[in-house]
Length: 432
Image 1: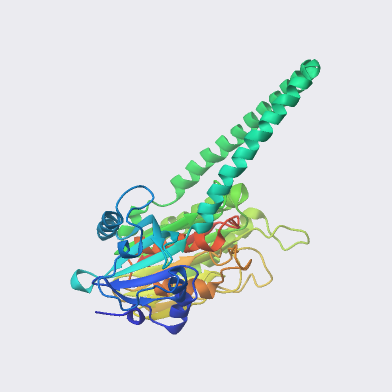
Image 2: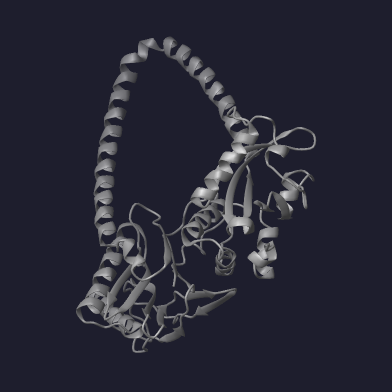
């Protein structure tokens, strides 16, 4: 049996879990083998460290809020996790005073057979329950005020004709605005279908990788981040790019980028990463008519692009601001991008750097835009930062790629809370 320090390899990552607001309980054979500080606090000092035959039902009311017995509800959740790789559910616990605590539980199994460990992530929902109760109170207050308004309306019956005329004008204006908005939204949604059709089919990744995930979250209906994959001369080429802006302007740039990559790789047959980026940069400059003049737009894109030759087991990479991460066993290697964009700038004649790396089976490769690490959080009002993002990926190495995508989304949602998404988000994970 392994322990949590075998699963979470470095001290920095364990500190991340130990200081996390989300409670963590690790089980093996129904025995608690580790918890973090948040779990101790959440369960009010009753976290059963080292407890034998631990069960959620044992620290819960007899019945869950939906009326189902806690023991049956727990068994169902563990069965679902075993089948699907994870399970998520609302749950009611009770502390030593018998007070109920409301949490959201995410359950992730790791390993198989007698060596299976279960990771329980608990997020407190007491505030959300209180907010729902407060909403009911507010709704009652609104209903009371509505009755008062109705009484006032009866008192101003003599002005009804004027009020109705004003109402009709307002409704007409509202309908006109709604119609215009709907037309614009329909056009953008149609553009989104076109953009999605240009993105590669996810099945294409199965031809080159044993496992993969694509986390693609445009800020708006359409976005400026895009991913691209192709195979030429037995060499697989993969890219993740972040175009200037988001929404419609970013989407137009992304379509241009995908079109240029298709021309460079598939038509011209260029498969060396630095040469691809040199060619792509020149095409963008020429197409946008960039000359470095004062007041000229600096539209362009950042990109991470790599190739894999499975005959020589070589990975080659070049990047414009966007780095590449490779995880092998418990070690992460970062291949650094050049600090120059795919656009006109003072060092336009400087060629991009080509990095080379020997790949092995089970290596994990990650390329990404800066949307995830630049997202502000609701608690601290600070960016997530790249260091935290790297630690997060290292912590997920025992989880399949599809599970990693789920955990990345959970972490992002917990971090940003009610803060708006600030930029397009793109993360690609691939396993050799």
